[in-house]
Image 1 (tube, rainbow, N blue to C red):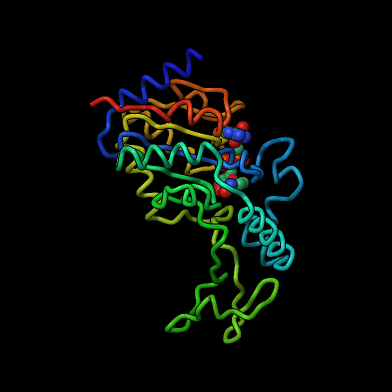
Image 2 (cartoon, rainbow, N blue to C red):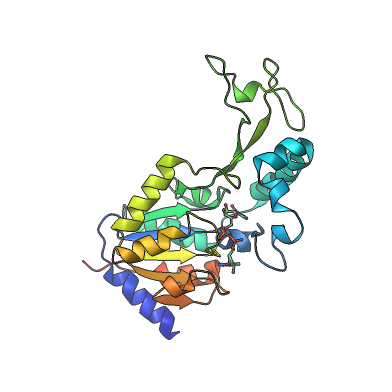
Length: 254
Ligand code: NAD
């Protein structure tokens, strides 16, 4: 409770200037919406599947149907899921204090967007989007909606395969998203980190970067994370429980 009050005071004191609050979210943000995280020991996706096969280009090339089908199932889970109270608390805060909050997410679901944070910076892509496995050499490029149905769908002209629009292991993050996230981390007064293990880079590095530039760091996570040492306050709670308590009636100071 003391930690919560301290964190609320810091959030309040950060003021209302644009970009004062940078929020970095991870898979735990959507756990209470029923979307499993990758690393939670009991329910995590990696506990049941091999990440090298399901989240790498090599794995997709080796077993395209198996990987496509696995993503198809995850896409269904994302479509069925609804934003939770944590997503809504962030969206409500952004509505009440336009520009104050910059939201950076590692999540590939669309729950922040559906809650109302349309301009969330997506570091790891969009699971509901398709893109070609190989850059299309044709000009104009073959269009993904024209792909022939299949598992995975393929291009009737050049045979290219569709793949999910997420960042896989070993791939670069979208440069503009990463640059925007780094600027937000450097410019904020407070960084609020929600539901991430801090194990995936370069996203995890944003926390240290914010701190180096003088930001106060608050972590919300029910379990220990690899970046707890970088936080000024660690709140042991879940996203849906803690974010409304932290943000709902926060009135930024000047
Ligand atoms: P992670 O799976 O490595 O870690 C999840 C973290 O969330 C853990 O630290 C866990 O303690 C915490 N957590 C669990 N339940 C929570 C809750 N209710 N509230 C707050 N925190 C909770 O996730 P990560 O750090 O985001 O990194 C893994 C990668 O997995 C990311 O690149 C992300 O793209 C991808 N991913 C995304 C989704 C999604 O879009 N919803 C789901 C699974 C994985």
